[in-house]
Image 1 (cartoon, helix red, strand yellow):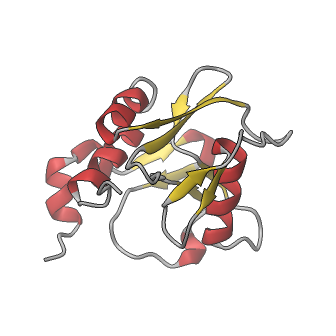
Image 2: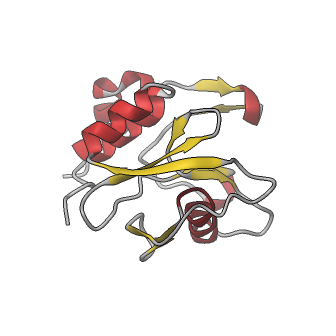
Image 3: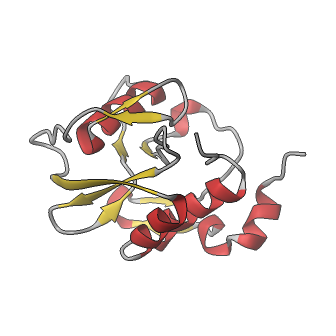
Length: 153
């Protein structure tokens, strides 16, 4: 049985709360519902490695985050995911979902975030690390785990 947003919002109320995001100048909300791809301007991934770990990145200002970023004009969501994973985590997407393999260092393009560390952590440790800077991204990992999406390889 597929559980909808109402079920998950009761368990993760902060995650499902609508909020204003300054840097995006937009009101946003988290959802498990399918969206029109054209509505997605940013994407962050819970990237799962073959060992069942979650990829977390640290920028030079010591902030921990899930790899992802802003969509470029004409870019598909798959293209966005592939580009951001390579730039921020040195990882390759292994299909159309967020299974990845870390293949090198982040490429850190000049106009992007300067990533200085990439870790492959068990889901709860990844959520704990993310919670230091961004409790919402930590809840995204916990939600993915509660939905059974982070099964170990």
